[in-house]
Image (cartoon, rainbow, N blue to C red; front, side, top):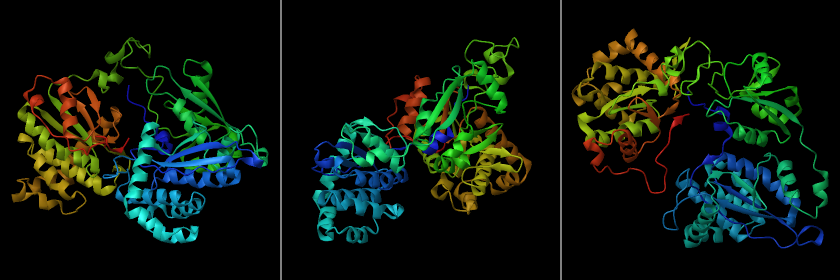
Length: 528
């Protein structure tokens, strides 16, 4: 069956990447003269919005607890002192160094500087000098640390600590050595730290409990990718008082609620009226909720129809006497597609930078395999009553049409790729005609006729329908031999995946160099 794309999880999931870390020096005294204290480890990226939100909520809670808490702020990243890297680029590396230098200079004043920089986190590292003045830090010392070897060394050591801890996502929060999975508001963090203290400061006795929010999560054990544990955990970060109830499709109560809510697919998360009690969480999730009978349903993007035939479980799920691929509804499922040896297809959005990179990297791959490889490009879009739509807007739809028309009108020897590779040099430019005529041998008049007539729209609509039937939404997504999908942009990885199903082809023995920098994942995509 098609993969379930949990849109909400993509929304609230932490950014996963290699980033940097900085460590706050420990404080010395505990509450009310006690030496007891709880350690909070916070792993972030200076330009990650989720990390910024966590820091802004945590700092007031830490300051309320005072010496009862030891905050250790780390950044996630890659490289050593000679080659520091971060997910959001050199600006983030510089921001990380500034912040870790500030923490090294004065762990207490550092809080004020961090809060100040977070007020305009998109501009980091710009404005750090004013924030240093506001926090009362020595700018000269900070500059020396930032521009010298000390800052690089501190950051590299912090990277190493984050890696040794197995941390990848920003923010990752640990209290007393345990992963924190609670809410993301100030009182939630305060409650989490207080729970770890045997001797409670007075502030810990006056934290109001979070409002209870009831949610019913419907799933189906037959759906391989309908697991809801991660969903419930993420919902708990939005609604700290969450009271979840999970029901499987096999339960008659699940079927009853499914009909009450007028659902069409699973998984589903249904809130009752108790969601109104948590005003902050309800407001945060408001645009992701829609009416569903007596409930509010979270838009999860679920596509598993529990009433439909499952195409690979050797069971007649619908009771119509036709099992798996014999059922008409399974014709487009990957498990039922006819194998086509030496076939490689890629699904892209024409203006997605990852899709552009993937198609460009096919120069090396096709150079290795030549005519032994049958290569095709398809487009990810959505056909609506108002017309075809795509993630990057009308300009992308227009380019999708031109590219699919180039494939249709110039199929011999993959001539159409000359148009693709030319356009990819500046895919945002409206001057597409520059990639026709003498430069590429592409006939502009043929492209225009196809695009302005019905042919282009029919071709793009068919691609959009195929991508939807296969549940392909990420650009690029590759399909090998018409049967197996994978993601990636690196030419070496493309060759490896293709040769997994076509090992006897001569191109599998050709050495193709990777284009990915060391320690950077060979994946990436638009959509999901």
